Length: 374
Picture (cartoon, rainbow, N blue to C red):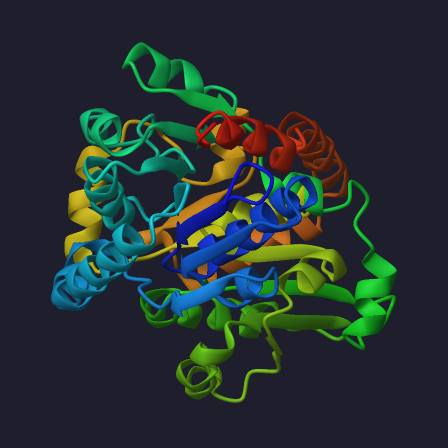
């Protein structure tokens, strides 16, 4: 199609990847208005003109859940690869989901297609052996965090620090009043946002602890909101048990803008909470077998992105056996009772926001342009 209107292939597997993909496509289209993009993606990507051959519905976490759905995922990857090889996009971009995308990227690269992986896997946190896999799979890696390219360059892998698109999209000063008005929340209420995650397994393992904490934290003048991926609402509603929690269809950014504090599942949402400058308690719990496997591979003392970027425990992490309603409520009350601590962490979050705000779309477009045919 030519470099003025490139044809891209993309693949994402879950809601967080769809969010990144939508932001990336929005920025790339500013450079290439005639851009076309096809593959596997969700609603946010489709809103940017993406042609989704399959939806982003392969959000499996941990060895047990992956094994249960392995045949489905492999069949999807094979069929997607067949179709991409047939249509031959100028560049394929695999967004996150390394267990799915690296195999796909390797096959496409062997077929002569250029491949980009967007979001460097956490090789600095666990599974450093993935460097060999990345080298085979990707012509170039777009890195969200500034320390990642050096690690990849030492392994002979092309990489560019592009910052995080959420840092460009989220305002430096969150629109608290507008968000509360949109969600019909009182201006003077103490609002606590509960973010249990976007996977079925996270609803199963984490949501009950967050709901239990909300019951313990309930006081006059406090309000609780919980954004939910629309398709997971039927799984969540039976867990509420009469708890006074306002469920939101999506709208996680509105919830974070409106809240004073969030209890949040570890993952991309913790970075979103930091960019909204919100104090948080990070929660995570998985199947016992998954936890045993993950714990043995960890290279860092932190799991939450704000703590990893700060290289210290800015915010508490309650993981596995510590992810209980009592402990979540205790840490939440500690935040609410300590205004100087809240102000200090919000200032650190401003610094993280400035570090990650790099005009990601422009940097990504420059790197992708180098791979396009002349």
